[in-house]
Image (tube, rainbow over all chains, first blue to last red; front, side, top):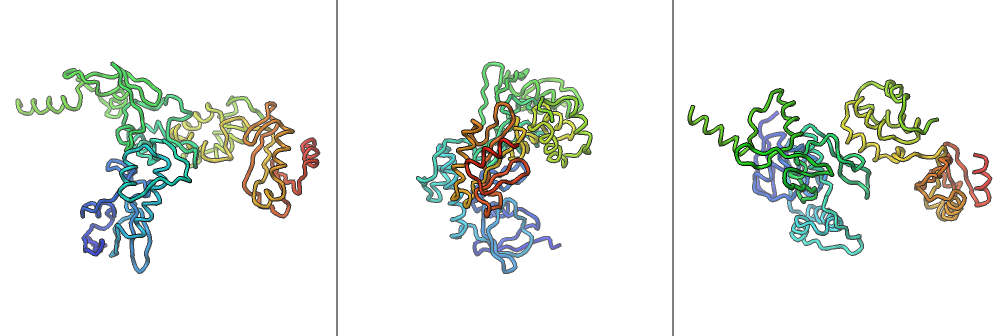
Length: 247
Length: 153
């Protein structure tokens, strides 16, 4: 296999490493590709269909999701062709109907000149079903939340909409959500998420509530060792640095 | 056929399958046939047995129409709503079934005898309007034929 692939991106020659995701190649070139479901810490998913680009390869032309498409051989890539814009506009029309109040969706719709289609029933959903939260929960090793039902009824949440037994309250799901659809309430010494309330552990130094008890139990189990001093990531870094300076 | 929540027969059902995540759907279909629905407890134990996250078991259990979280009737009635059946009077058939059974599509009678469902095509358009009760097909239906059929079930 060659160690370089030449792509023609919107008329400009671009070098890429074989197997690299087309989306990453394009972003390195400074091409602004809209995405909802893509996240650097998560497995590529291809569910939002916003990163579609047109690829002509070996005489065959088609639309592909650039987040799932590996650069493997010489090809022409069009990132803002009429066909690409039409595909993105279609997706944004549906998103705008489902997520009418979501700022990110409104911004993208504005950028592509998409306005509300009256015949689609307007919904005020916050969730776009990009499934970043589900993947984040899985990669953390919990898989406490997942999808339920399908089609119009499809939604994300814990099984039976009950406080999930497998959740440790890390709130990684909320952290990766592009639309702020997952509610996390922190009040005093507690954090409530997915209908379950967790006790927060406070940093010995600064007093910030930085993790839940369940989260630390999980980390201890994963590391197979005790966590000696309970410091928040910030104070821990400072502590380590000071020890290095002294040492 | 038992409808009580997962009891002692659950381990026996699970034991028919190797403990592999890929067996999930096979187990769920088997549980559905046995209990006529998927009890929560059975789903939890299935997750544990196959080493699949409970959230994923729930995801699959709610995805397929053949699986149900609520108890279904002893007999499942599927009335075709395809174009041919619709034109030849399916709406009247559904209305008559609703009147006789006292339930709407998607519901189950309180004695757990019948579940009423609508489907989009049974592939027997020449027999329109058509319905299925369990594995038997009934065609060229009329309201008067319906009562006869139901009484025989």
